Image (cartoon, rainbow over all chains, first blue to last red; front, side):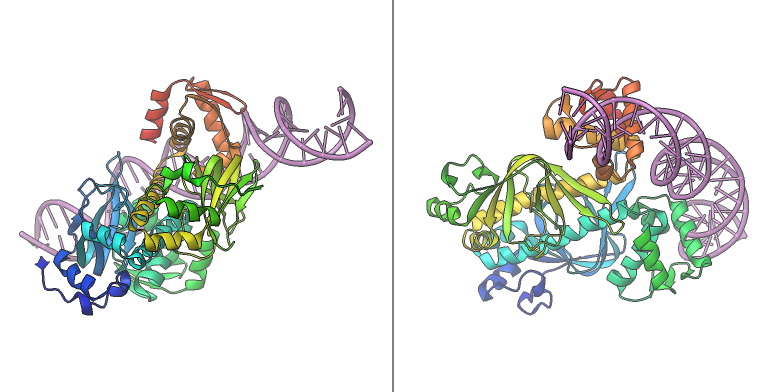
Length: 229
Length: 229
DNA sequence: CGCGGCTTTGATGTTCATCAAGTAAAGTGG
DNA sequence: CCACTTTACTTGATGAACATCAAAGCCGCG
């Protein structure tokens, strides 16, 4: 699960937020860094765990979620690499307010938060770069939450399918990474109605759906439903 | 509308994010700073305007909102002083993605963004302080949006009344700062149903309501409705 | 095979938005 | 200050949207 080899200097992911670090800073980074692998379904951290590391996703796919007082999962984000995993709250809280788990097998780069704070303090360009990245990510989450809220059910399903297609996979054909129930938890509707809406789209020829495999047959129409909804 | 006198060194709002600045930095701040007053209803900035300043609210009450493709207002936040006004996007975008207007007469402290970036670069403690503040604010917005999404109508109305009471006014009796329609735009429901739900609460003795004046007569029951909804 | 979890569909009732009509309140111009 | 106009508020009635419940099919896994 842990891999301590460190080739940060050559890491292709330095552009995520570490492009401004100099030679020595990168070298020190290795001392504060771990690479962690998680199997499908593995929990990266839970609500309430103490925040001790700055983590970002190197490969895989994760979901960020919380448990409501009623005991249901509410999914906040499903994201690909380069989006931070512990983006929110690392500067404002000392315990996580959301859980994160791996939807696909995932690799996390985990850096001691103390060193990140040190870098922010010492390296102004790093501070600016990091703020920019974190802002981008939180902006996206807020916009997505507002987008979902203002849509009706068909609009929500269309929206999330286009999100998977355009943002997550960049392809009109892909395997749904989550269960119907998780889609429901993501866009705040009931599982039955997610399935019903998918069946409607299939009957209307907007999508082709076979188990988890989905093809968006008519992206324009799906876009109209998403926009109008 | 503009007030150029500068007594930043003594400003009671330095704790917002400027507590770590030294003497000289505060002095320079004055060169990059303006104080702007807005009447009730005044627009502080609009979606699409270029972002040139870091702004925060010194007094008053503002709403942050966007216009949906359908032409309706969707309110993202209603906030009191110390919460930044142009918090989001100042590091990730060069044009505002939300509009902000004054619900009550408001005073904004507006600082050239270039100087803020300079401070972040030069003063690590300031960078950390600012990141912490911005994180707190975006965290709150995300949580609130998720909270609203998972509630039914009665729960949403109860939630927003408790928000006004506990967070905005700190009192069980207050004047509603916004119209019924704005409440609807805030919690994503129709105006008629906001009114209906308020009438229900009044009939059940949970609130007393006379025009804009509202008293929460039974906070416990309202809390239950908010929690269960 | 047989069991348990995910999926699908139908039936039902509730929740909610919309429409319409009316009332109160708040501006506006003379 | 009053008549007029407009905007905000309120309520009821209606139908559409949506959640919930129940039953059955499917599929993977022991």
